[in-house]
Image 1 (cartoon, rainbow, N blue to C red):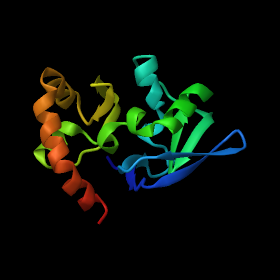
Image 2 (cartoon, one colour; image 1 turned 90 degrees about the horizontal axis):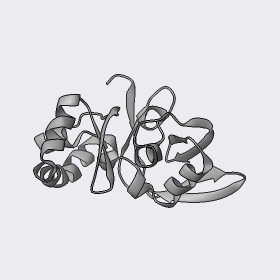
Image 3 (cartoon, rainbow, N blue to C red; image 1 turned 30 degrees about the horizontal axis):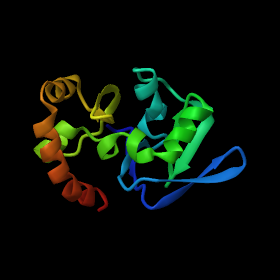
Length: 156
């Protein structure tokens, strides 16, 4: 998608919350909007788990990591994410795992999603989400095997 740019999110990124410095870490590239800097188009990653639906976050509840800005619906969601971004952030940095399994990187759309094995996955298209939902293990196996090489290529 033309509206997306890639931002490397590595190591410990600072997060400013209520005047205190908190730290969160993730090692995967995260898809961000090149104009706003928002990760996953400003959707609250915790809302998928808590509300069972994509919900836009609010500017009042943001966390910044490595150049990406994450938005949340409330302080509790933000704090949970900061404590465990590896759990609540989209797997594979928001790239479609079905396409990763095919050997290509396609940005996931926050409106096409699934939670499998207590992890959030985003998909570029409804048909890839449906294929994944029918049988996740082979896609996950192949995506996990291919992801390190594909992620390395993104850095170039």
